[in-house]
Amino acid sequence: MADTAGAPVSRADWVITGDIATMDADRTIISGGAVAVANGKISAVGKADDIRARYPGAPERGSADSLVVPGFVNAHQHLTADRLVASAIPDDLSPGAAIFEWIVPVHEHVTGDDDELSATLGLVEAAANGITTTIDAGTVAHPDRVAQAMAEVGVRGAVARWGSDADGLPQSGPVSDVIDAQRDLIERYPPGGLVEASVALVGHDLMSDDLVTAAADLARSTGRRLSFHLSPTPDDATSYLERTRQRPLVHMDRLGVLGPNVLVGHAVHIDDAEVEALVRTGAAVASCPWAYLRLGQGLTERFAHLDLWRRSGRLALGCDTENAGDAIDALRAAALFAGLAKDAAADPTEFGAHHAFELLTIAGAEAVGMADQIGSLEAGKAADIVVIDRSGIQWQPPSPDPILQLVWAGGGRSVTDVLVDGRLVIADGQCATVDTDSLRTEVRQAAQSIIERSGIRPCSRWPMR
Ligand SMILES: [Zn+2]
Image (cartoon, rainbow, N blue to C red):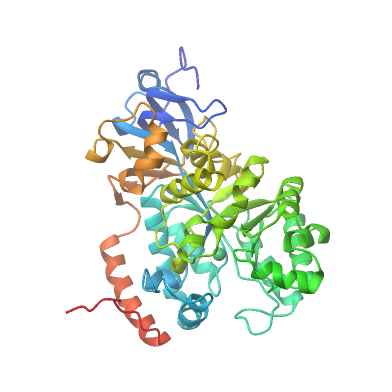
């Protein structure tokens, strides 16, 4: 907490008031506090009276009823195509059918305009729920249009392009072509801006050893993140054991792929040796608990992410994709993760709301390699700030432990204001950067068109008369 006594009067673009959950090293919560924002950065955090005296006349957001928290990190999100058929994919399909009979046909028929619209829709929803940083888990066809959507909505993020050298997959090709395409994307979105790019592979058993090794070399030599999917189900372990006689993450470790710049999507069905490889190398995992439950993937048989957390492994939360977690709401994911952790351990004392909230903020930022910029409300960090209104009936009476109440009883519905890099993206619950009336109209038209073109047949389970 900054000591503002005697500080000279300065200019601020915003002063954000409320109880401030700083997520600093001591997890200080400043009652009746304020955050001053100037030039996209947090310039001071302290008691509201001190901050107002130091920054007189600055426009204010928030109120005495507000809880002010760092913007949330969504470490695994697919933004294109299937967002346009939101909650249309049934929840009782056999394994793989959601992807091959529903998502693949949609992806085969989307245009660049569709992908940008889909990403805009997803990012506006994410921002309205307090997500300020989104790590794209891999865009099949149009990563530049996703980057364009991030810029239009005004949120922080990393775009990525699907990479695979497996036969028959869209955008797959020889190793050299895949690596050239990855290099092309990361060179166009360097670190330091609001939108950067990661090196990304589809993962699973859809990457040769040559490809994943070359991708790891590219990521390491350019200082970028490498992400890929692995082991959301037991299937990847089966195919790696057949091909390499090793479990997937042990194999990745022996190839020299794993390191602190690696973000593995899922890693649900992993054994102790794989947890050990993650901890030892510092590779991080993006856990998307709603996806594993929506798809019935056996997460609760053994909650390996809790083991990873117990061993101080690096972990963040994600909301994944439309067939596997219909809401882009990080607080819903945090509450679910906390509940799963308590239940899997059959012990409520070990992991709770506050640990889950760390995964959304400072620990999540650390897992995606951005903790120097985001994840806490401290002077010098980017002004990615979420204001939560606690005047609604669901907040009555306000708890003396605001984070306990936010995680278990909150959800994105109480978010009123969101700043990213000091810019107001959500104001009074409405998107300030995108015309959502036009977005709604465009999305409905595009959805009808993509359903017709792709041949999928979403309908109500129960008769509609
Ligand atoms: Zn994914």
